[in-house]
Image 1 (cartoon, one colour):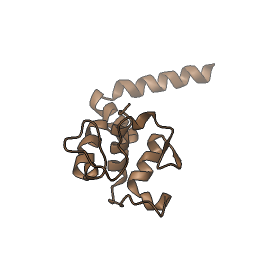
Image 2: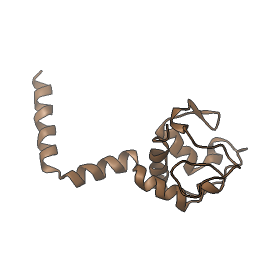
Image 3: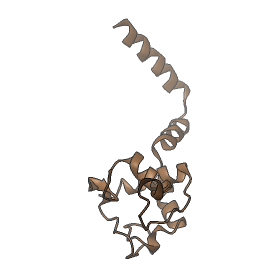
Image 4: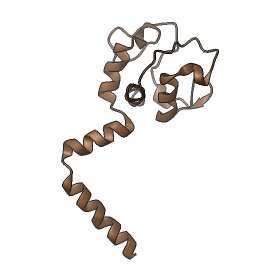
Length: 123
């Protein structure tokens, strides 16, 4: 019990010493930022192959539509749908499935996390 109290005090001190922007930056870096992800999806040209709600011009018919992707159990038919796996898939799809037609766009890990964060909002 003393351990939990001490941990609470330490965490409280940490939170008090951080500004809101510092906390937001830490959260965004760890989990990805959906707003940046939406912009990155447009920048990487994902809409040339996929239909993606909320992304201007994203009406591609080559890959599956990403409408409601956050509700799907699997991505690419083989990976459990979670942010980490979506980011891995975006970053290097051929490392997961050598036969996929999805190109490797050489997304950075940060960009992939941000894009995964945006896709997680599509319910």
